[in-house]
Image (cartoon, rainbow, N blue to C red; front, side, top):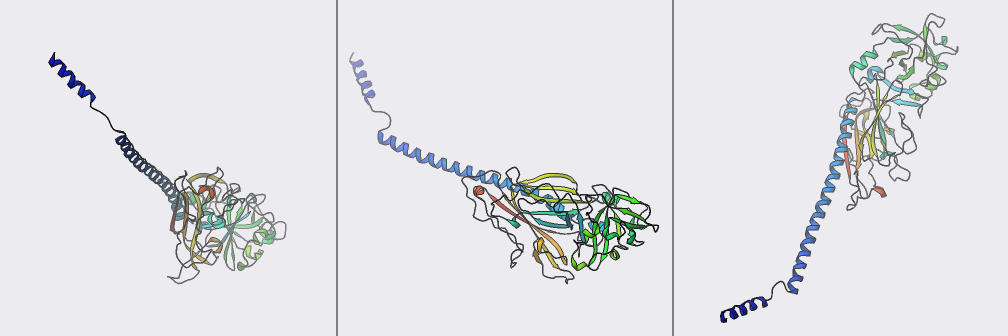
Length: 422
């Protein structure tokens, strides 16, 4: 019994010993845990932000890579076989009554300003970018165009038709006032490069030697006549939306004064180059920014250079908010090593020799990052220094709905390998 009582006393003593944390210890533990939790959450938040920024940058890089890959390929091909089709044309003019503007000069590569409410140079409806109220106006958004043959076989197959020469007196053209006030031309074939004849439905280039060089005009071959009264056949280019209403007199109004005034005497002995009728003979590629779905996307369209018909359109890169182009020029006849002047297309002269194109793309992220604030201005690097506006790239100003977007700028210089004018 004594032993049992002693054991009970020891057990009671053990049970009476205090256990757990005191209030002070508990508060300290909670404070330490809170600090650790905040640190972990901060690290996780930083990691998420970094991951978001990295993802946005990766998306922008992917979009830019897709755009620059196609742009580089197309610019490198600009003018390919274009000079063969329009041999040494000092100026090339096309007409399409279904387009706005109806008259469009063509070059191996050229550009046009893009503004909301205007029509794309090669068609496709009204331009909707930049939107009304956008502080980035004018040169920040351009339309870039290039003309080229897609391949040697496609070009040669359709370009080996006879070369026709206007002769026997243009006064034989209906309505008796000469070809200038008509859509008819009396022609005679010279067996220069094949025995293939000209056909109704073809498109041809009329090449007229004038004071400033060859002036080239695109004309449709609608009808073939057997005689003009002096034994020469004739071609008629009406009715067609590709021929001006008043014939060659309307074309004459588009020719710069430096070439002189188009007359029947100039038309006499001009050459007609039959380019056939298939859309793959010569093509025009058009890049522009579309925002019809509420988000800017760089688009690429391909057209037939023979009749301006659309071959296809594809979306290239989402997030492109600025497409700008500068052209490296030197004066015609300049000595090797002459200083290069970078110009916007509107400042490029017909006497300039164009050596290269600098293309600038500004892209923004597809998704907003609300932990990030965009800079007040996205700087676009210049191809060279010391050039006064407008011979420079324009910095991009993020809009109110873009302040949480990430931006990247890409500038690439592309040499023109297929130089065909001056």
